[in-house]
Length: 220
Image 1: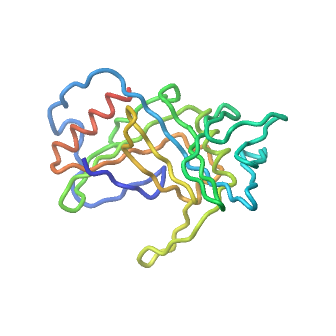
Image 2: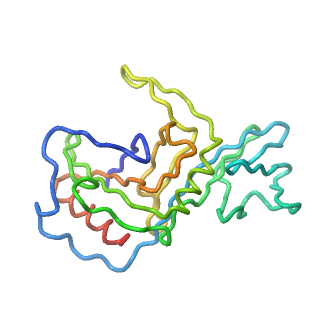
């Protein structure tokens, strides 16, 4: 399956051409069981002389010598939990450490959106793209808000437009396999995002519809 990086966690998709509806094809072959869903946010921390600060909302946690300090205790930065959020190191250099923070899990799923305003299949070049949204808990949305509040933004020129993005990505996994990597609009910094979108592409319209249904069933 070909996967697509989309421009933001929340996206309004405006396309010309046909949007397939759930009634267009027979139901997809049934899957087996519920998949393990995880949504990670990459969180960069700038280092000077090996020291930096991890910010979660308005709270600050000093980082120094490979440890993070919280409430007078030190924790190895390779794997720790703060404020109910699990962190691991995604990338580390002398000037920056990028953490991978677990924001969304199966326990946070409120509803897998299947209505036509939230899901569908559309032409995408010589392929077909499917998309659907997942409604997550308010607690998960608050974790997203607290982590993105202090992440810097960058400007990128795309054709004639100038777009702002967070210096971060949302990585969505099913059963340990990355299925979608999402760019995050700068407008979403500090916002409680509770409807991340999943998108992917397939060779035919029928295959795209079936893959969308398979993922929706696995997450329900």
